[in-house]
Length: 310
Image (cartoon, rainbow, N blue to C red; front, top):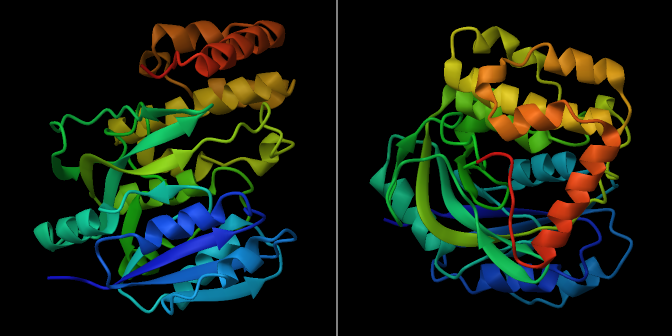
């Protein structure tokens, strides 16, 4: 039985990608959906490109530039369907994506959060994401978000469908967080809801390098994990998930010469939750880390993918 789905796309200066993203939505074999695009104060030709599409299911709204979190929240509030599918304006879906999500909704009628596996498009190549979930090839099931996301998150802002009741229970995207507002919401969801996850690859995440974290300028703009410390005491899966995020933030703080943040973050990490590579990198100085990052990026351009999470 088909369920109408509201597709929410935040849009800010994506003139190079928005046409391909929209075409991937309009090519869906599942047809019962609306497309809500929130123009977040774009200054390029993004809006002109959107308006060139004549499909009546597309609804365009414009706001002042307040960031992706505000745009997504605005779009969710405008959604008329019970189910909301998020999609970033530079990613795209395979034609069977919404059909797969609809089949999961019908297969697991008591669940509220649905996600599918992704590929990453990086430096001209596609790479399948790796997940710490034990389902078979192109299979699905109900799983714990934290336990299944220690390598790659099983939820991404272009691979998730959420029942609107979830936002009533856990809140929406935190607009005060400049970087990591996605992870913040996924944590709140994971604390209250199991995730229906399919290992079938249904979407593509378009990786854009941020030039060693230039999108934010200080740790104050990053996600604050402290509100969730009270829950990790009795939740080992959450504890490991948070420690892995603390590890990533600690590496960034060292690159920014933020000794105070590095010390605060590492003091809360249970080292047994990190692998040998991660523990090794935490001990390195900034110049060594920069060297390793450069090597990793150069290898990635050659098609060799390295990760400290596996």
